[in-house]
Image 1: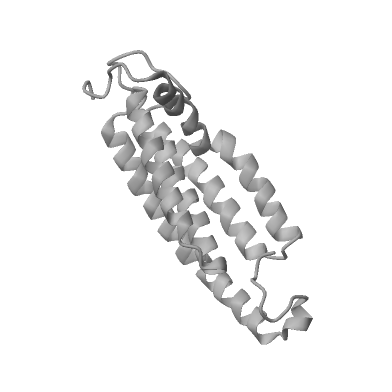
Image 2: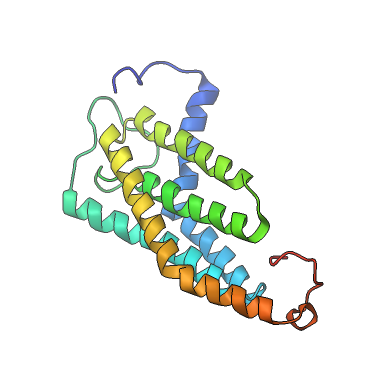
Length: 190
């Protein structure tokens, strides 16, 4: 960890301070709530809205429960900077990056066949998780543990919501395009 702590260009330092805000439940949960509301009310995709909100809220709850259970102190190698709260293990940023960002990528792949969200989620995750080490607020094991917990949460929610996803696709395919209110060749999300 000591090799990470060295003078860096100001722009890099600002990136390491700012980017992790995208991986906090404090920032992400209100955004996810609005997107979920839009999916439910405007797109009539309640199964997507519920899954997205459940993954996000669940990652916050899992993070809080595990941090409370472990109570691991944060590294004390240099002054902490950036956003941090509670105890060190597991990294909540890692849980969010693995579960929420990749849930969004999977949804976009299933709905639009877009592959680029996986690369965007992976890049955002790598930079965010490195920043947690760079800022001195996590041990490497906090980040790895949070990532693995996030993957388990991702897999659990994908499994739990699969029947709803399959049922909604069966219902959508059984209706003629004119009944669904969209042209036959349009994508499911507008």
